Length: 283
Image 1 (cartoon, helix red, strand yellow):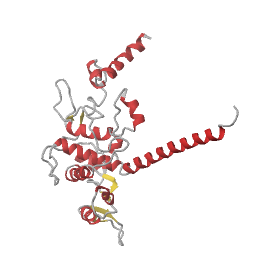
Image 2 (cartoon, helix red, strand yellow; image 1 turned 30 degrees about the horizontal axis):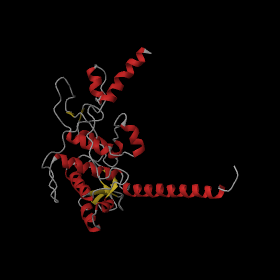
Image 3 (tube, one colour; image 1 turned 135 degrees about the vertical axis):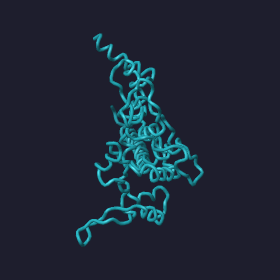
Image 4 (cartoon, one colour; image 1 turned 90 degrees about the vertical axis):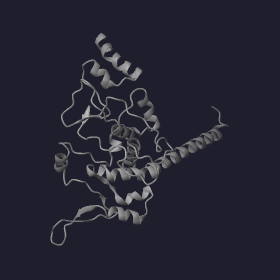
């Protein structure tokens, strides 16, 4: 029993005072848990049961992706035609897709060929295969961006994760992406990282990762006057990746609200009907 209490108390203290588990375990000489720091939490426009996407932000995020991230990261599950949800016209989408080349075929001679992309095509991968991607990126295959904002879910710990179950909290992925992009720093004294990797206390798998800091202030020019800073870039591309992972979120929330409203009205009518039917009955 004493051993059990001794193992439980440190984690209880971590939960109460908010210390990062990785920091606590490192201080004790144990195996660290990642991420080392708690994620930075932002106020997203799509948060909550009535949240919606900011189309201006999504368009800026698309610009950051195409000019910076697309050099390494694919988005194989997102079709060009879905960009209409970001406010682009059909002609704009056709023009945008034509900037990419996709492999097609076989032709009449049985050979594959490349052509300009059309709206029905999907964002192509910058590499022909995973081996080529790993070779060009220090042995690490850059993850596909299509579902990354939903896949990178980091629990907020006790007691927040209990409330998250009931509130439909789904901002963990964007918070993680934002924290990672803005969290690069020099490794603190006494922390050894693998050669060729870069220290980031928000990385979910280790203290460092193969990807160098991908973007900084002034890297992308905005047309709408938004700040051209790392902080803004990180917010915009994180929001865009959330849209890519769940483009129909707004419809889902509207449908869910209508269903809950219907169930509430239906339950009230059934209760009143029961009272009316059985009001004169002897019990």
